[in-house]
Length: 252
Ligand SMILES: [Zn+2]
Image (tube, rainbow, N blue to C red; front, side, top):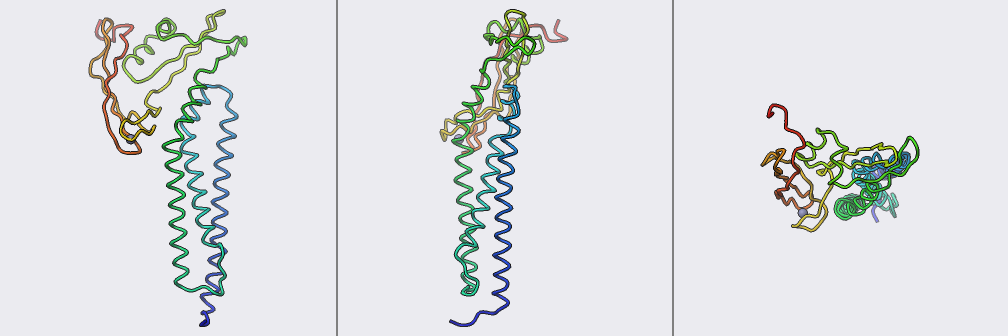
């Protein structure tokens, strides 16, 4: 075998050292993101706050930490099984190509797992947090979730009108012994539903429009524009909304 240029050998040695260091930095980023998420999530006691934190952050943070792990894995593969002395220039580029391919493949696998299948798991946990029995902070009593039909008398007119006009839901929890209530707002557009085109749970409301304004006597109609983040499918759905509780200002 022909002798390699010593400059090239020394370049490869430095290269391997740097790639190993950068790979470890990405392992560190993965660990920091994961630890940060769990500490924040576990330190929130209030079920509603925990619900909102998970809904807003979990899928994205999990994706970023898996992306960082994919990069770390790909870079690590670049340094495995190489001996600088026997390196050939062509082999160096083969390794770069293998690294890029593996990183992309890992990232794509994690991406579809997280964006497509994982929301089922997250939604299940969000649902159980939403329905977890609330405790009255003043006396420790267990509170009761009031049904949609009965909840209006505990809500302000603004809340009832907002529920009538937009894709939001209010939950009313009542302590029956003291009449103390906790009212929580849930934004319907932040939750993903199953896409009729690809079957994955990646369909979300992107925009909404009032078609028929609700009045005190009649229900309204709201048009929701859905977008699938997986297959790009778009659709509109018309939902009926509640009657208004009070006349809007200026229509007296
Ligand atoms: Zn779809």
